[in-house]
Length: 321
Image (cartoon, rainbow, N blue to C red; front, side, top):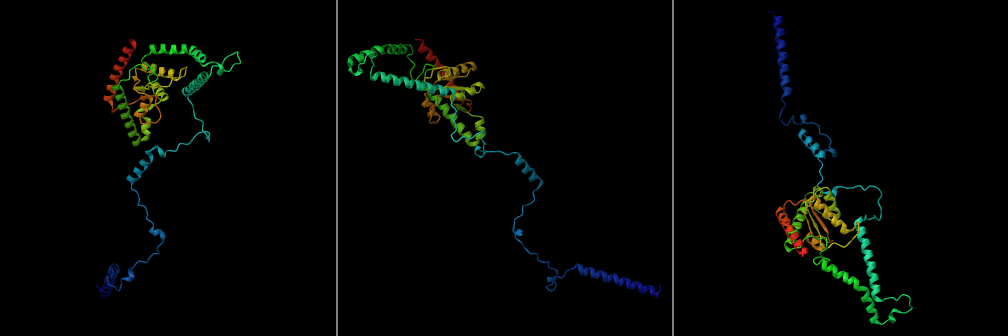
């Protein structure tokens, strides 16, 4: 090899070795305090947005769960539901009066008018055709006139009492079973148990409890449930108000009895209105209770059915004589 070529190879090797040394010098950072400040990053200016906590990015599973929660929107209590009224809103809303309530009120007013007329007749007997003051008539003659005018009504009442010796104002003529102590005890126990179950269901979930009630109160609710064959047992008070007529209370009770007989639903007359309200912890008097679900009180229900049959047999035996 010539001298010229050897010099060229030497120079190229030297350049490559110098370049490698420079590269290693760039890569290796000195740890001494002399070069410490040269490799520090520039400080950024802080703002209020830096102190705000940023939400973490959700994973795919979390996003799916969030979507499911949105679709299954459940309402635990009815207080959160806001019902929008339809139509007009009156300052003094009219109360809807049912046909039965209207007939009861009409009968009450007529009875009140009759009572006032009877009281006026008792105060003084007017004499027709003579200008004589009733006070001028002797007292014995007034009593004799009153006794003669009132004797037929008293005789009618005595005949009615002899025909229906069992029935009275507290035990009306529509009742067809005797009110025995055991029957009263089982009825009040069943009502208390079912009322407690219904209150517990309302506290747990009010919407479901309203959809599936254990019992309903009132003649109108009982008739509505009888039309759809939901009633398992019907209780009627023994001292319902006297109200004759086509749409009166007496005709309504007879209709309830007829529907129960058609659907083979057991019914009985165990308690007074005040006793029914006391068993259900209500202030107002209750004339009718329809049992829709007796789960949890099956033993009491079975004993009550047997007692109803015995009470009805006793009533037939006492009315036959």
